[in-house]
Length: 327
Image 1: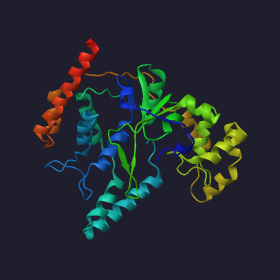
Image 2: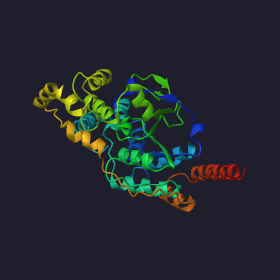
Image 3: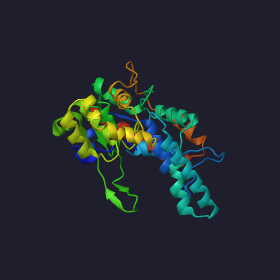
Image 4: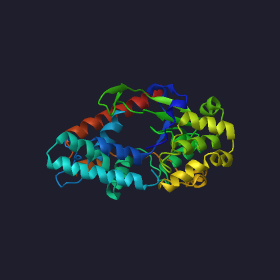
């Protein structure tokens, strides 16, 4: 679900031209998950090769790259189970539209999908760092400690709670996004800077984490009932310190516990304050291996002509980059 504090966070529009030459850390698991969810047939089934192996992730990683969460909680599991049952009902009725709608909701990553994705990314010359825990925590740590990494790219604001100094949202070539209502909204890349967020809200980083926990994170979905971003900000400014902040809403949290929606705010706080990250990470960009790219994709029945067309674009980009460096 991600952290929902967008309406109190200052952000500014940016352009792809302003990001040229910069290294951006991306949560690959989340990206692969999105490809599996969106790159599908009309009836909701993912793209597959002749052997029945899923290839949506490979299609997204290859074609879209050239063109340019830590806990699995019970609520999420139940939602996927419900979506799977609704998909089965739609399939019995041969309702293609409904099948497509619900099939996207019970996507899960397998080890094979992850391993194939890593292999393809490396062949494309994209650096990979395996996070020991939450990927966004690792990306935030990298952006904070490595001067060569400019920002974290994510649609969620969780990266700010992990102290990412800069966040890029809407990092996509698509210029519009479809809403649940079926309508579309125009989108463009947006830039969020942690220091500006803290200054604008007049809070420190620990208080920002507290706002996140009050409104709800992946570790405590829904947060404290009845508390949205603006109210959370008021509570944080009034009580200042985490212990006092959560003591002020102790009764609401205890009431939620009786309903089965309890959480330990201190435990969640520590997950953001001291996340499990690889502090000895190395970012290494390998040379593009065209033969390996073709081997991976052709094994899954991708069109050799389309692969060659994309590789030609890749060569063109490389040549242009060389010319810019010489200039």
